[in-house]
Length: 575
Image (cartoon, rainbow, N blue to C red):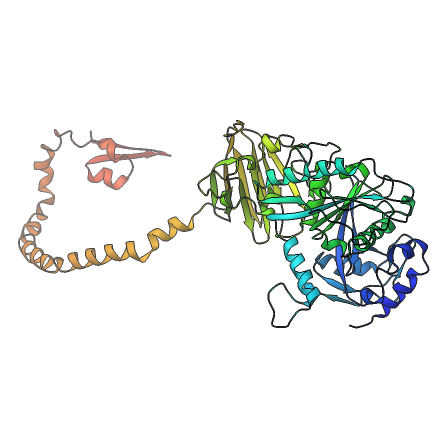
């Protein structure tokens, strides 16, 4: 294992910073710092209008530190291209840990960036992996799953000066419903996924080393951890201290205790109401916010790679849980159309249309989705152009979505690009008779809504969606295709060609002889016919001169008189 200079400097800095010393010393020694560290993006929220992201790194024991004072060009450029929870970096040689428990990059940037987990993608490779690499790879793959069973541990953190305002039994009930709470993290994810994703409490586990400071054994998915730090030192110090205390008490890294570990910090320890690491195992809450289902759903959503849902601001799309969070114990809502598509919970009720295609039919709310039934009405329609897409759905306000805070019982439209971590934007909320048009990939799409019905079990929203030019290719190609052209060409050509040859020769000979003599003599009486015809034709009023008032020549040939004055033209009988 290689030894980085940065490892030595950071380890040395630990001994000179009181808060960080107590937190890290002995748990992250030289060996842990010798490794490349995992890059993590954390998303923080204040609960209403503001959110911010921080760059972080995670060491092999699960301890996570925020990066500060990094090279601005790197932070705004290359860092944006790193995948949280997947890519690894090497810290600069002069990085140190400051008194807030953050890694001060001293204006530097990572020495190297390793794309992909351990420098390789997730596909199998012929190069053997170490036991730790296999464990981390399995953990990463598990985190990327949006279905199945996942374990959760909720941690009550006690500092030297404060504690959270509730006990273990109350926290277990709020997260898992162990004593009767009917709306919580577990029940709501299960309802929204229709039983496809279940967050279960970690199995009971006893400590392997009891510090005798108030730390407890794990029961019903909850544990109490005491740290030797004050809340005033901030979450930058208290959070890694909690990680290290868990590791010491139970003999394994905190991140290996459960798929998701929630830290509930004493009031005033952190800024904002909560934050979580993208595509990772850890989420952090301020006191009571650990108990509210909307915050639980939101932060765990970040853990499973969901970004914010915005409208006019960063996360104010309140049709689903990735918008604002609410200080309400029981709130029944789910995720917007874009997030629902990303989660992949409704494959039997999803439709996709591209340029020149359309969709006409009813949309039902995801609340009435039936797992495994391809004959049911659609829940989602994706309008796609390359990596850009728009998602349409009916936000049926009933059952486990009864408390949706925006666009209830309306057809909603969100944009979301790509397939991974990326924010979505609410574009429209339409009631019966509503219409919305937008541009995607240089083409216009239009959504028209019929009469919406809101019956609990059968409510639907009829929609008509067109995208780009109508489907002209099929009609054009059908007439032009060889099959229709070939059959008619061969029969008609062969049949007429053969018979006409004899027919033309016969008619030509017969008429040519007789017609020649009569006409040659008949033309001579061109003057006499003036006398004989004049009497018969004149009384014969069959010639209606008015019929020939469009053309002078035809008028005169009919024996009529042509007159024209300006634009007025007429064909009249001769006097």
